[in-house]
Image 1: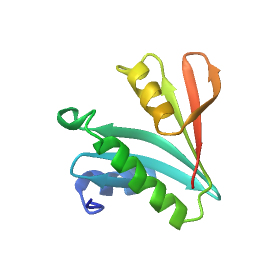
Image 2: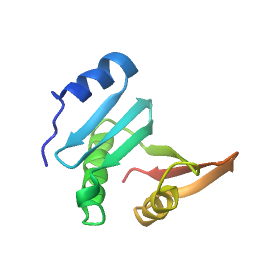
Image 3: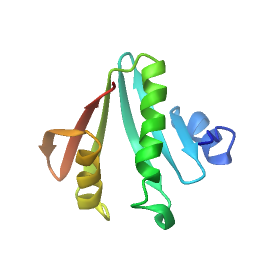
Image 4: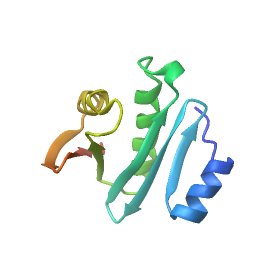
Length: 114
């Protein structure tokens, strides 16, 4: 997997959002980190490769980067009003995330970095 940190979108993420990105030819994960925690702001997998394992592989790449940087926990929010939110929740649970909070149409998930 290639880490495309020099893309225009990656530059935007760094400059505008003050966030970091893990990106390859199939998708990206935009995240913030502080101390031992990382928060996934958004994750996108091209629809032509969904349900092929490419998203799981990108998440594994992200987890490896987190581990290298001393991150112990990854959290994310899933907004129920978003398109495909039920698929997102199911795939999150299938990749080791656990629900730790639900409030006002938002489900928060957490995963330990191993």
